[in-house]
Amino acid sequence: MNTKGTACMAWACALVACNGGGGMPASSSKPCEVVVAADSLNRIGPILERPYGGLPQAEPAHDVVRMRTAEPTGLYRYARSIVVYRQGEALRVVRNRYAHPQIIVYTDGTAPRQLEATLERFETVCHLSELKARHSKAAERLVAERWGVRVWVPADMSVCVDRPGFVWMAGETARATTGVCVFSLTDTHRAAEQADSVLRINMKGETDSMYMQLIRPTLRTTTMPHGGVWIQGLWAMQGDAMGGPMAMRVVRHRGQTVAVLAFAYAPAMAKRNLMVALKAVLYTIDSNT
Image (cartoon, rainbow, N blue to C red; front, top):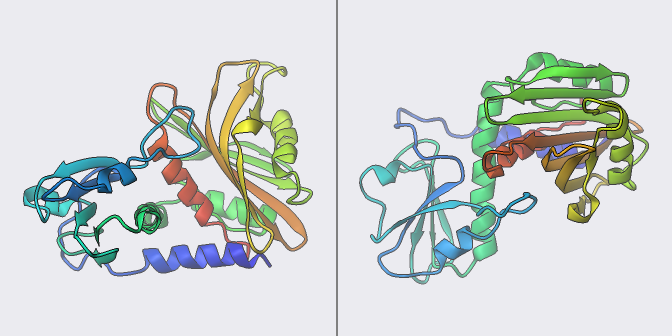
């Protein structure tokens, strides 16, 4: 049993099951947008505007709305994510004070990594809540029956390719295509290399000479304590001009290795929000089925 996968799914379920709205107004603002309230110049904004990793073009981790006030005022009080500059306070979190879901972080900026992690975790929780309310039960069943793992696939995705050892589900809008692929590997070693072999066979373009591959120099790999692997970076279609960001999680389950790869193709728009939502899908992987 992959205890890391089970822990991630348990964490996801616990977070989305926490406090309901309780009659509070719904929070406003876009995903990854943060209202920063400070009555003087401070270093909070630059912390939040650091680049979000794994994208083809640089994008800030957050879109910052600055207020020159000690506390958020007016409609800004109902923003989903708020950071308030407070001298001498490293980091304190208040939830759902004016709206739901909402996080307010009081900080003087001396704990930047903790601040970033807190906001990232909250953003993931918001996406998990949406996934819990609206995900494809048919896709979940297909993956569970085929590999014995559970994953929440966005409800707007449908199965494009279904072959032994490989499934590709995709969603499409006028400006973007997103996809989730689930496939088998032999083990977690050289996961990117193995994934390329699988993608070359199953993710072809208009001709056999066009196929999806991971761009090796861009990949950032993290090995998890119980043998799982996370990989984030870029992908490209060999023989074509298509490409974009991707994230992949590899887990071990009952003697087999399962990879879940999420990717986006959106040449005419920013891609950070797409990847934040897709990475939330990877947090739902549960191999304890």
